[in-house]
Amino acid sequence: MKVVHTVKELRDALAAEKALQKTVGFVPTMGALHKGHASLVKRSVAENGVTVVSVFVNPTQFNDASDLDKYPRTLEADCELLATCGADYVFAPSVSEVYPEPDTREFSYAPIDTVMEGKFRPGHFNGVCQVVSKLFDMVQPDTAYFGEKDFQQLAVIRAMVADQQFGIDIVGCPIVREDDGLAMSSRNTRLSAEERENALNISKTLFKSRTFAADHSVTETMQMVEKWINDSPGLQLEYFEIVDGDSLQPVDEWDESPYIVGCITVFCGPVRLIDNIVYKEL
Ligand code: PAF
Image (tube, rainbow, N blue to C red; front, side, top):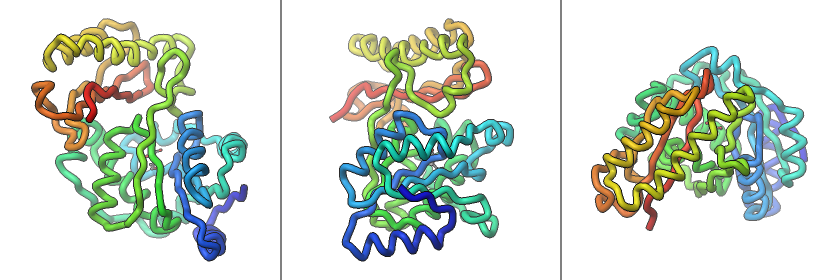
């Protein structure tokens, strides 16, 4: 596995690989890698001739400066994990390598990017599209892999790829959970032991709501989740929405769409955690 820091090094290395007709799989990350990322990388390795993983904490997608400062940066440990997954290249650029000039481009995929995270983190998806479009341009992969935990991000990236005609296959990979159900996240490392215990009620509530949803309305299911989270010690609900899995618009009835997902964001102490659950799928 080779670690490269500049676009030139990356392009030179990939030109040689592409000359050998190898397909390129790409996993963009912000580092602080865990088993969820490992599952994306392993899938890419299984499906492609070459796998590139980017490790870059993208400043333009943080609308809260302290969140950006606190984001864990663990490149050495990340590289160790990536080597065990079979990645071929780690691209770990500096901020000035990715943004030699301020990025003034604006991406807008309303209404997909204006609900939920779009409402609570204004500018977040614009920053994600800025960096992912740059990374796509640098790597020029055949296929790129994203986790379904960031459900709305995946939908926004699909919209951007269609809009910008990147010609890249976007593969969504299932959420990887700890044995007790907590969705894996780089932010979990910031939880104290007590917060980690409290955070468990997020996935527990979502799993219970799936059983509950079988004989209750959408409104009742929303109320159940809101009450359970608000009654859980140390948790503060930011939003819970039950939405159509493609348009991300709220649904009122279970028969409104063949694909329905519940998306949640909760503060566990100071740490903002997201998760989701599929209620209905084709
Ligand atoms: O999901 C993430 O880790 C980031 O949003 C991404 C896609 C790597 C862009 O910075």
